Length: 273
Image (cartoon, rainbow, N blue to C red):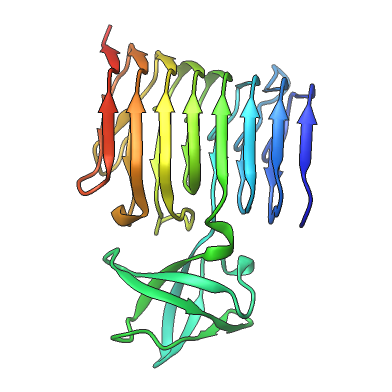
């Protein structure tokens, strides 16, 4: 809904889901000076902080996050899949519940190629839309959730079976965080995921000044690194700047990015102990 949210000086010790979950926010969100940290009695099962749909500014600063089961911080957006029923008629699948009749969308083919922007005629999981070449499957993000920004700084993320930050939509920065002793890689920038139905446009994102030590391993396709830039739609990732990060004791690569992604790197220190 509309309005700003501010959370300060709270502690969350256990949850069978997310620590904090924000949905359909049209406003600003601030989380500061708080601790989201599992205890001996139980971890945070999923993400520590999960922003699943927003249009505004996200500020996450001076927090401690650990002993969680998935991403410490996940800045996301619905990336909806659609399967053709008949010419011009599609059944919406993943993330369909975020869609409203008349929403403006940006559509992409299964090969990641941009198909155009459209207004969607939608009801009960069925969308009527005339796409060029009438593909059997296509994917789209909602324009209403693609214009926000995030500012993630001065947090400590440690001691968890997790990725530290997954950023999938918006502009902004991830800077001056301390990330230590996690069993996955640390920072992922991903523009569109066919697999789990999240992501949109990432444009003008800076990853700088982070101190990352003792990270683990990710498996699966692609070039995994402590900091990784990737996605099923490379054109959704533009003006990514990775600079002045200090990375040590890592298992996969230090910094990696997919082909055709717009990335600039400056003055990063990688020490594989």
